[in-house]
Amino acid sequence: MGTINSAFSMMSGALDADQAALNIVANNVANASTTGYTEETPNWQENAPVEINGVSYGTGVTETGPTSVRDTVLEERLNQQQQLASASGSRLTALNSIQALFTPDSGSTSSTAGDIGSDLTSFFNSFSSLEANPTNNSDRQEVLSSAKTLAGDVSNAAASLNSQRSALDQEASGVTSQVNSLTSALAQLNLQIQSTSPNGDAGTLEDQRQEDLSQLSKLIGINQITTENNSLSITTTSGELLVSGGTSNQLTTGKVNGVTDFFLGGTDVTSQLTSGGGELGGYLTARDQDIPSALSSLDQLAYSVSTQVNTLNNAGTDADGTEGTGTNSSGITGTGATPLYIFSQSTQVAGSAASMSVVMTDPNQIAAAGLGDGTGDNSNATVMAKLANSSIVNGQTPINYYSNFVSTLGATVSGVQTENAAQTASVTQLQTQNGALSSVNLNDEASSMTTLERSYQAASQVFSMLNTIMASALNLGEQSTVS
Amino acid sequence: MQESGTRRQHADLKELVVEASRALARLDADRLEELALSCQALNRELAPGGTSRGAEMFRQAREAKGDMAVFARVLEATRANLDVMNRLRELRAGRLEYGERLTRGWPRTEGGHGDN
Image 1: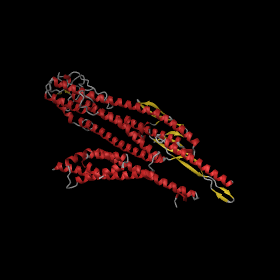
Image 2: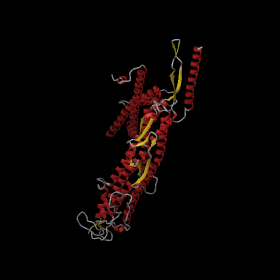
Image 3: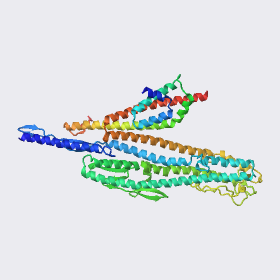
Image 4: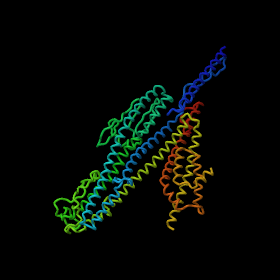
């Protein structure tokens, strides 16, 4: 009887185990389209054998619970790539807005920042016209009018850049609450996982933790360290602690020099977060590097053009015979009581673009004549017209300087675009790999790896051939140009 | 497949490069192999004695330069992902081997890691 009882016991145990396994499979199917759900597999444990009349008999198996099919290393790689893709994505959005500001709008009738290049040409051309007719009032009016257009477009560009900077500051600041909410949730999940599954996979709780980590990776650059009892410590990429076990450190903000800075436990971590990645890294890079760099270039242009034009105009004689207060290249100093300035004169480069304006109201004050040369002279107008081709802005002509600034901006946008396209593609690939591994999916890991390898090999072949084609095509073009 | 390659012979070079990046991003090996055939056809066209359209190809090559940079970076990222996946595979294989040794009663010593 004992044997029959044992057999029944084994059979019912097997049925229980099968039922438990079926429940796990049913759960997988039910969650097939649940975001972040990871497939679970049943675990079987051999029961202790029984000994009857000196013979050992097996007693079947027991289902001991599910284990999620996940790979933390792959998930971590995915999070890292996500951080990079999010950073370049948010930076690219900001850079596109900056670039749009300096793109000429052919359909617009009013002058904009995009017209600064043509404004500079028109401004210096107006001196060439004045050079031909130094006493002509409409030519004098044209100098002031083109100066106002140039100053207006430069100052408007600076104002737009400053307003974009404020908008980015707000976007960056808004990320803080999302980060804090996620780090708090992660700390809570750590506690739950520690108490329920200190030695194994925590299934749904682990899925939730991974989902929160993925969300956090989109926002800021993070590192994760697995600690004892299946807990997780999370730091910023530069090592500042965000979550340790069940405790989260809140990110706080404060205004420093007019912009939002970020603090962790009283330490300013703004520069670390800037280089760390995630949306916040992208916003901060645009706010603290790209926009200040564009502003600095505009400041230099505005300062150099204003200063050089003012200096020359102040060393000449206006249409009323009044001399400026400056000294010309021959060492002669004007006898005037007040300076003859066309533009507002900045005392420093910083802020010159925002404050650029035309202070001269009377066109007669344009000093086309040289000092002591009489009102009909044009020698000073000639010198001012020549500024167009003089290296007065950081060793470059004003037009070349502006053109190089726009080209550099374009190259930066193009570089970030390339990075973002590659990082986004990398994220897509990793999601595919991770999906094949951990989602409820018919593809198994081996076929997924084969696809990755096959795709890489085919792409390498395509790349190599395209390289040859491009080189041949460019060579053909050169040959036809020469012939 | 050959038909597809022939069909794409006159495709814009830029279009081809962009499509290659996209296909690689979504790991579409079939599409990439089709594109490889297209490239072969294009290459033959450009070979000495081929029916190349020099000026047109020159223009297309210049236009496709930026997209080639993107394709190069996607390829680089894929190489890195492939490395990670290969390391993971080795790691898992190592883990399995280690696990088997333990169940067979091998001692938990340095030797268990296969150092000696």
